[in-house]
Length: 132
Ligand SMILES: [Zn+2]
Image: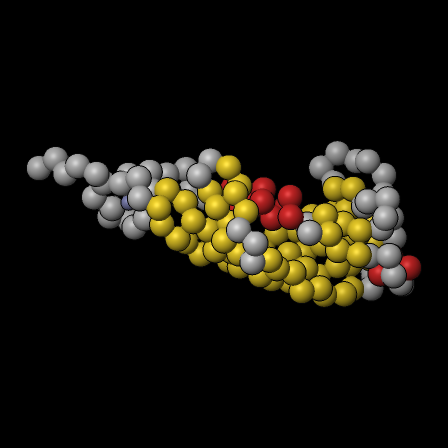
């Protein structure tokens, strides 16, 4: 998903604008993680040569329990921010030539970052075989 910032980058420095974001397209994120849908907002701040994007997203994910190997759905709300710039700088994202910013990749990164190392369908999942 790309957000058009053509007009926004010509507004006054320090100006902010909030855009609604979201998608109901199911997306395979790899490692048995499927993004069912996401919805949220991104608040853009015009910083002259850069645009600060503050994200607030709610995601519905489906993944596989590491203990019982069943698929389960989970919901996650989180906030994060990224800076977009015209020049290629490390740890910043690039404003595209058509004056848009791509937002899905950072959302994908954050989802993966925030998933626990051990994904469990429930805290006390008994797993596949019970050893008494
Ligand atoms: Zn389980």
